[in-house]
Image (cartoon, rainbow, N blue to C red; front, side, top):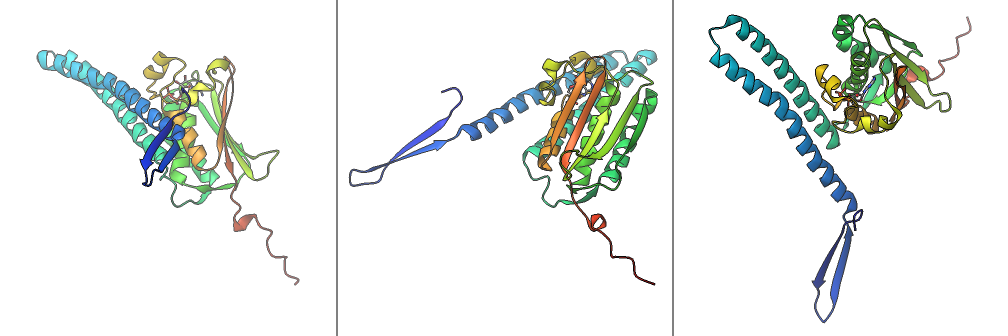
Length: 273
Ligand code: ADP
């Protein structure tokens, strides 16, 4: 039936006996369905910039004697190519994460370093909108994992925070130890932007889901940022929490298992002089 997929195999094993194998393929089926959906959606998303580029190229070819038009269309082509590049990059990243081989050798990662690198990545976008970036909270927290994946996750959250905020607002990163569980690290990205309606909050983590397709496209979104964040969190044994209210902003929080390092252990007693 709809939600179950059982595979039944019957094999004669001689002397009038049969072996019936019933295999529950429900989970495998779901993964297959997800993959197929992803390929269909990804192809659809790729068609838009590819189609635009080929149209623009044809127009340039037919109007080669009009330098103003050529300059304008070349600019648009480069914008669409950039979009294509981001999309392909996100698709590759996501399929790598889905294959589950992204985190083969987890290492000790300094959360402070992750935040510094992630802030560096979005500085240009923030400056362009005069969005003020701040960070603070508990220092010297560590997690076990892959630094570059964590930088990608935090910078995706920052990128969204800037993208879905008005100019001259503030985006902050707050680091803390979970109040209820000292073994969890919280990395919160807080914005004062447009917010997300309640009914869309579950869905924003789905691949290619956007609350406002036009806004996401116009600002260069791929629709994959948050699914990447969710995968990175899961691969690190963590989760992503979302608080948001339309008009009041959003807070996305990566919650990850804390990694205690030698520095966290009490040091040797000071020697008597
Ligand atoms: P996109 O590339 O479209 O930003 P994401 O997967 O990163 O894709 O986000 C999915 C959707 O969630 C966005 O299109 C947007 O509608 C919404 N969203 C994500 N982050 C925020 C935020 N900080 N504030 C408001 N809306 C957001």
